[in-house]
Image (cartoon, rainbow, N blue to C red; front, side, top):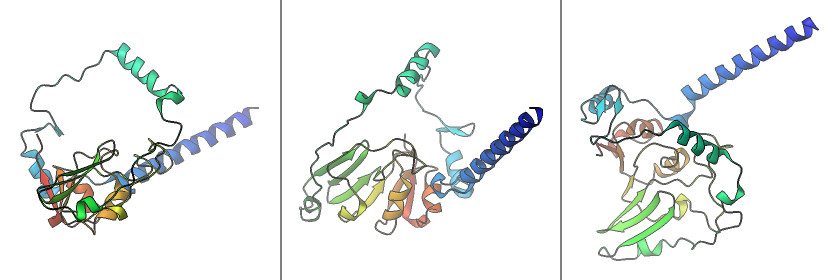
Length: 217
């Protein structure tokens, strides 16, 4: 019995070490993780009024505290298996029509919402794509994480009109999608992003001259 327990303990230890090493390798080398800013990009970050003690901060005092009891309740609600939280049937949506962008005059205004924060708009003759997330999941993993709702039509980059620029608000996975950016990098010449986010795009193959980093307030 002692030998069995000893072998079991050794097996568990090896499994834990393997998992830890795998996670370290993944978070250091998986391309979808992005990159850490350095060099001139890091210096620009440090010169921002928002950047203090290694982090960006709101210039206006913003209370983010939540009582522990309320936090626990929110977490329980989040993990509770309640099928009513998400649609169980296919949602009928209009199929995207790029003609309103390609054939409309420069004085027209067009607006298309693809879900969550992904938006396409034409204003003053310019076509802008905001926070495009067209993958199945908003996650660093292809097999787990928030999954898109069942829609009658899904958007993809091949259906997009000619774009003047892509705007990214921040680098959470539900706003900055690695796979979508890869499909856009040869189709768009301008990517407007907040300070530090440009490091991700540059690692993903977008030329630095195509990335415009701004200090969004």
